[in-house]
Image (cartoon, rainbow, N blue to C red; front, top):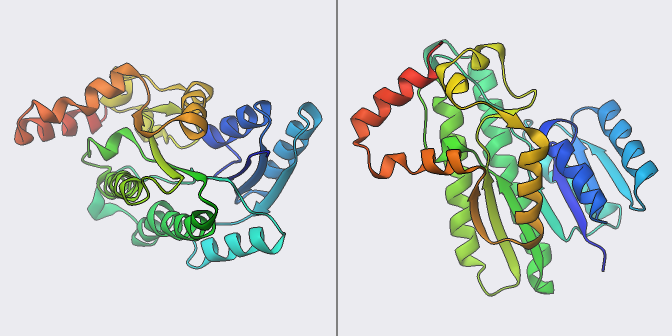
Length: 258
């Protein structure tokens, strides 16, 4: 049976690269993002190159109720995904006290609530069938929360913890849950202010297609959690051997402008 993969945040960055690579692997796709134009161009590009079927659904998952509506549209179209990739996410960089409350709450809705809704609906459909694979995209900052990324770090820590515990709950059911944690990646996610921080100077962002390659491998065949890249894996383990207060001072310096 051909895999049918529902992938959120598909129009740019890691999501777009995953879409291309999954199509190369022969997977049918349900792609969703906010931009209808970008989704249609991606669909046309994929179907011109690969003998796969691509469905597109426009959705803004930062809005309350959008995740339920999206999954309802998928099922109403007679589609039953075998895989779900919760890739859609946004980030905010800057002093928390100066941040937009509306933007912060929208990010929390996108990064956490919509992810949970889609996971719940997908798992409910797949459990009776005894198969299915769910992958959530976390972040290096799930392991290493940074000042000036306070709320974003917290949302990704949630994603990682949720994925690990859900994987344990579903062990032996045939439904596999994984989480991939990229470090800095060269995508439109990054703002000009982020590029100017010490962290980006010392840990150069990598190409999105390289991150996508590891994410696709984990989605299709892997288990557990994966931090992308040896340097990021090493950094993610520094809190194990570094006192908390010192670690936070180091992270604050890294998160500051170079």
